[in-house]
Image (cartoon, rainbow, N blue to C red; front, side, top):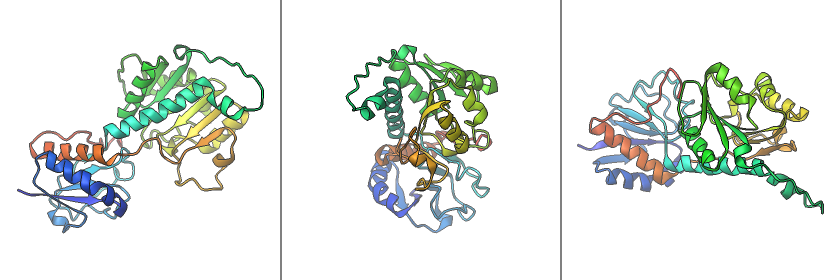
Length: 310
């Protein structure tokens, strides 16, 4: 039987996803009808972006699952009309992109590259950085992205501590969890990387009290979610020198307003939410594989835990 699949995202996404998604569904051996418009009662799967026009799932009476195109689900997980399984995007392309971006900025801080780029003034600055084994890096969040980033940094020789809300194990990583573990993880964080989900429990993880725990002169990299940081408190910590520099890729309001103080702050690097992006080819394979699993009676992968919010 033909499987009816609704693509519910902005029109420009359909332009980039139609061909790779069609190819991936065919490669999975599925007989399907993929469209951007269906009578709701006929739809069995929705390939979804939370900023699409589909916000009320009640009319989708045959719906089996919603397959999110984004890693973040905070804008849909609380939708009371969504009662079928919701999956988040765990995609090789997205993961690899995040690993490359975070690794690059970690090395930038570790090697002191900014001082050489910005210091072309004739001064011979022979500041030799420590080896990676002597640089303490902390990753907050050990989900798929945090685990991959941690392993990449371990592979480069860094002394890596990872923190998560519940106990986890990653080879070569000092894994901590819970409130006491968070304090310990921050106390050694010369370079701190934020890869937590956006939930009520994680909002303002970095605030005055936690920023003060970190070593003076630490650096922060946030490719996770904007609300993880209390912006006022971070700016205060930057102004006082408690935090030496912050590289921020995500914000509470995007695009970041031109009047936002982060733009002009000398110790902040703003990047426009480019740390990683879902790649249509690999994401389409992920979606097709999950639909194929569902249709053959296998459990869906990467199902969101509504209680946890991710």
